[in-house]
Image (tube, rainbow, N blue to C red; front, side, top):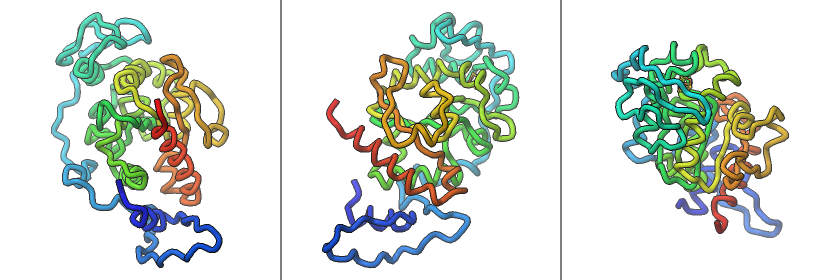
Length: 283
Ligand code: SF4
């Protein structure tokens, strides 16, 4: 956990004013400067060594999955047919897979056209028994190279957002609605999110988070199964429609959007505080 003073300093660096009740002594001046462009939200304060290197620029050494690693995937249908993916369980439905088999199934998946242009699948990272899940829309170029979700500038901003809540990336499970990069960083298409949906659903089942933070319009609409605009879905709690509605979902802006639109950071911080209050309440 970070101290109150440390959090105030971090929020001030993010450009978020700290509320001070009338009559209360004025807070000490914050010495941290506002970030110069093009990094309006500061990167996370010192992080554990494992998180410090930016994998976005790491050389790619993992092989691209073999094109004949067929993995027919239908929601609720057998997950793995003939597949060369190590550990894949032929004939087992996705909902029955444990972590190793699920990860192998994703690595060998060719169930939608996104497999053709990917370099690596991006399964997800973080604690597999986390209280928090952060779900974005899909891997970008950096993620496609590294195999890790949320790297690069948007990833660093997400790290700063989590740190402001007293969380490290390692304490949160982070993934996307699709596990392969849409070409040209376009949004995933509905058919692709639907095709990939069983993987995400199984991840949510296995993690059993206390709260899901869905970031960006595509992720929010996919997870909540709605076409409502993000602006209408923010600021309140939603039940995750699958799994009996037991997992609460909070919608907010994608870090990449916040990099382009710093004025939205204040609203994003309110969403994060809502998610924190949900995660902290009694089960
Ligand atoms: S995006 Fe999902 S469904 Fe499509 S190929 Fe990748 S893992 Fe399979």
